[in-house]
Length: 282
Image (cartoon, rainbow, N blue to C red; front, side):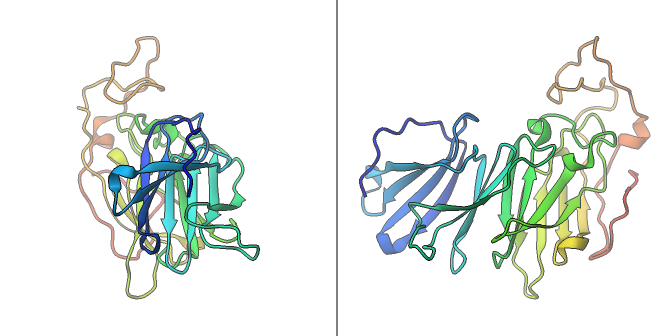
């Protein structure tokens, strides 16, 4: 394959490795660090000459790709998560022969999803039938999981891979304080022996959550750990729009919550039980 030397780089934020042993090479889907760059670069690394790596092409996904999730094997699908939604693509030939590892083809585009401005990540179920999509309100540095914030700020959505139809969602049931930066940041499905869809996610100061999405329309919380916040209770709450840990402007006061309501400790929830809409902090 001839490399496209006219490609102008957009930086590198997230790299997704794509093994292609049959062609004796490793491909890298490189998501740029600039929000003005759409899609991702495809970099080819010959296994027998790794110093000869080169950019093959830029694959446009119709949006900026913050992260790229893949499932190979018999499924051969990918999701570009970024901007105001996601784009699903194929890496195997369709009926017309279009689609390959180094020339993916778009299947469908979500269009704008309400309240989503920083599409962040996606993850496929073990069989590739579905995927989850999440976003990053506040860029991960702000307290966006408060009780007063929209539920969508702490929600994951689940979609059917081939159609893009939404089949379910899960909203973190435990709001965080104004001291805790929080989004549903990174997540992935764990292997199971019974075919269930169990998702584990890390959510900054909201801790780690385990969710059963086997019945996507009735997602249940399996377990969680919510660590003690890193900011001392005596600190003033940060102003909206400032990173957690920076000094809040005196012209932008935030209400001070009772310290007993915002302290936390590690807890767990009974396996496969419904998580109540509000889990009190100890």
